[in-house]
Image 1 (cartoon, rainbow, N blue to C red):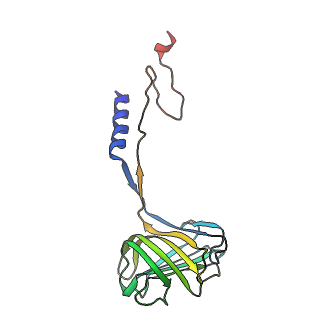
Image 2 (image 1 turned 180 degrees about the vertical axis):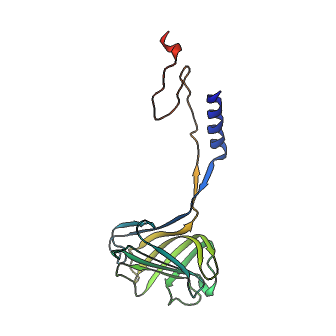
Image 3 (image 1 turned 60 degrees about the vertical axis):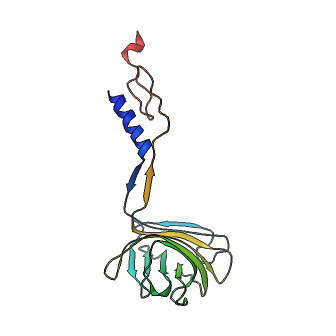
Length: 197
């Protein structure tokens, strides 16, 4: 009977898929060789590494800051839609350095650890945004930034109280052996008494 239940549960997960949502705050940064801001490295920070602060900026966009307790790492990120509009889910291309972008351009600025761009080009994709009263409740965006018109880029993702969707699917095939009492993939099957006769 238990085998039948397990098979039915796995079949249901396979057919319908399981979706789980968790609230996530993190900053991921990577840079191409020759990129001035991040350089040829990969950085990943969570609230365990230091505080994240989010606020609505004066262009109706979103601004974030992060620092480690010793300030060995500190980062600032700014995002703004064109024409002083609120950010919405979508892709923003042709971004220029925030807050100096033309009113018809989106604004972007990623700087930190003592490095910033005088001019930049870039794009970003907002995956989630929720505003509160003058603040940011949740945010998730991917970004790419090129300093001073150069080809090497800084890339990354900022998540602030975000709810990334994780889809889980069951295996497409499940083998159940006869006369076995365990089907755990982490433990060898336990022989049943009938196997010893």
